[in-house]
Length: 226
Image 1 (tube, one colour):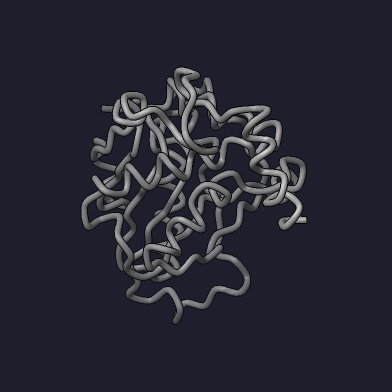
Image 2 (cartoon, rainbow, N blue to C red; image 1 turned 90 degrees about the vertical axis):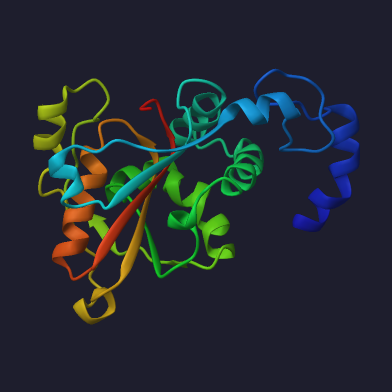
């Protein structure tokens, strides 16, 4: 199947020329961005954490703003299982990675924020894994599904901050095949697609530290926090 796609790719590019996901300008290859839009989309920055979050997460970083082209690429992937935006996200990650300090470079374990099993099945996968796994393993991290979500939770979107914390409290546990010896003393990079209030990431980080991790850092594809 991949050979057939490779064979057809030049024809498809001729019939449907690739366009920048932000402005629609023609670009050289699938997944490409025009230079001004890519430069505007990359907003690598360290995110502010409150006192409770700093007790679980040593630092948190975002690669771009949520509202904008990243949102337009994320929502179809997340809710409609449309993966045609993954090439554009990979191009974005490659550009953003050049500006990411040592905090986001390969160290020990990278762990995605998990979905509840039924939701992951309905969505056709975990969008955070689709976005980050290949990119981070190529940068030297060991990908590990070290967490599971133990119960379905209400969508965090639209909930005020105190309700977000209550909604997510106790919703995560170490995966069955994770031993304390494997986690002990490790630096974990915890990844998610969106950082809003940080409640979900902080609860995941507390679970990882309770399981033996020495330090948890967080990396989100997008956030509107500055």
